[in-house]
Image (cartoon, rainbow over all chains, first blue to last red; front, top):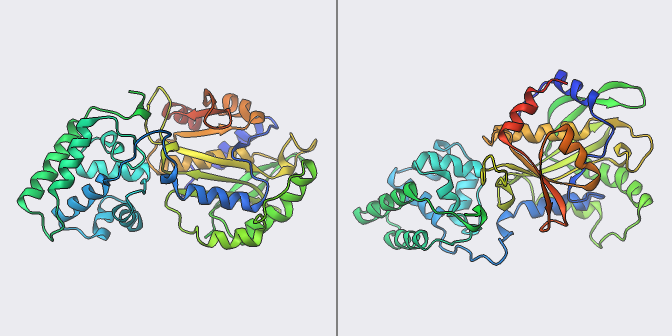
Length: 177
Length: 203
């Protein structure tokens, strides 16, 4: 990773900064605090939106899986195509509770040609508040079967779902909409 | 795994001059040892607490082994004088990584889970802090990661009470008010526009 500012910039800013406390977030006093923070951060999907229903049907995993099959791409090829790690694609497909990084959502949305905001509603921690999305997910899930290539019905199911996501204007409770 | 990203300037308050420090990505046993040996005794002397049963660095070192190659977070550290001067953990995905800023609601951002400096660098703990600049360096590292992740520099964090003025006035973040879902700490965001302005800033 490369810093977005150079050392001259840093010297000028630090020189003008007051001598001040700068701490943010959880309190770190010992090494175990660091590790516990890392453990918690490694499982962001475990943090639920209070009181919200959870997605159990893993529509995002299904969308990736079907798109890969449509385009005849292995996990590694697909990961390369959307510029994310192979591990992450494999994890999304395997673990329905895994909540991918926003960058992954962004790149996936670009590849599938749907708005990233629509994909956010497919995350496991997105509270489902829109019945039309629920129904579209259900229909999509029901249309799929794990054959090597996409059948005509599966292709139609995938196309319909992508079309729905492209036009989807709904939001989640977290949107405040 | 720990790897050096850059050599960066820290202001040595004792000498009144800048010196070189190393900015690292990742963490290793030396970092954990440094925190346990250098930080913890000072914190405990200032405000003793009963550490949990498992709060030994040997335990932490073992636990850390299981947390290598993270997908959802990054750890950064700054070292000078062979000691850890500050650490930051940022999260790249999950519920905290969506903007609450009116400029771009729900846009993805990097969330700073913690930003901590060594106790000898904290004016709240010592009358004569050693280094100035650790917070600025770590924060700009988070902004850099945000740009690399294609989040346009957007950052979110919960400031501890003594640091609010730094985030509000020096980094020009938007104060979104107290967050009752996070110990009533004030939540701050650096929007896309603010990130652009911050990087372009001239003192």
